[in-house]
Image (tube, rainbow, N blue to C red):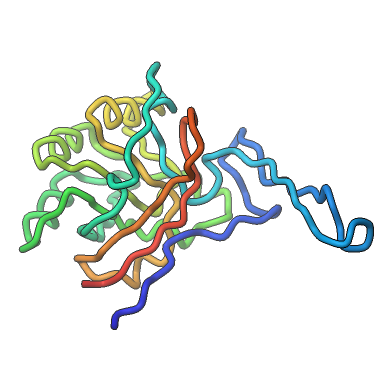
Length: 208
């Protein structure tokens, strides 16, 4: 039986967060020495590490998507940015070569090699034409080894707004993508906490 591959980055108190965001803080409310058992309390933002962005992140709406949206067969596309730009035509050509197209796409940009360094947050940008490709192919979820999805635009959140307005959800900060074939079974489950704008996830995949 094929093994599951962990696509989730490990977060700890040394994790370098997105510029301007808070890092993880762990406190101990109870300890074995004082109370006979350990009880921890964490303070973290929901965009730390591997996470899903919900519509509430950038839009004036509150959504509670079913966990079913984040489970299923997925295509893995390895794309090399050119001069820090992710070309839509390269995505189209790679997608058109697939014999079993799915509504979940995992993009491998080989950007995870910069994880936990300042360079990780210098993201390659998409051409705006990528939106038409995703919508016309009924893509419902995109995932990648990027900390953010951005157009080459002054509005850094414009791509988020476009995708979420088009009912396309986003998972960011995946790892171990080089271990994947071009077709996998993917699971990326959010926490069951109401009224959040995002959620950290445990993302895993199995090659098919």
